[in-house]
Length: 243
Image (cartoon, rainbow, N blue to C red; front, side, top):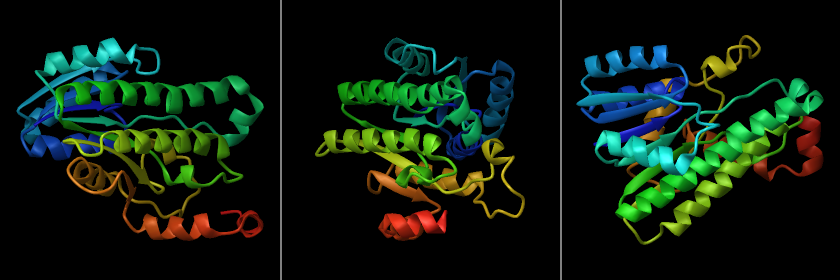
């Protein structure tokens, strides 16, 4: 098994890498921080990875088409590609400073979408493989508290679901995994007492998604039921609930 993980130093991506390492997979870990990548490389080899290469890369600035091909060549091929990076500045900051909103949109949607399209083209050319992209339950509705972030995740879901339908009838898979609130560095400033899933529980869903299931998967899975109710609320009740 050969796996490329983009945004490998994020909490969920690191937990996913650990699962693959324990299976003896060969990994290509990509993120901006070279020091953290080297520490991860040592950890993955200790967990049993057959090989672990790293690439320090600003994914939001790099050219997905040429760089993905290079990453895969260094790994000697690819079976699964995971895209798992995003930023979430405070809604108040992004609404007041459009440069902050632009940065979030370009990182979370434009960059992610282009890497997903590059991955889809590469996998389609080889005729097999899986693409797993991290989304969020936030993308299901525009909430007052985080609608700018939510809009970027909604775009990612639509794109990946479309890629999945493009892959229909082939040996290819594309899946968007949508976590609920998860205990990672991104949510470290959330109000105390808020119940969150572990990065490990979300990673298990992401790992399984590369092998089976539909194009949209919630993590943990009970979020499917929660968001079914949230999506069904009429606008006036949704506004009043302020959830």
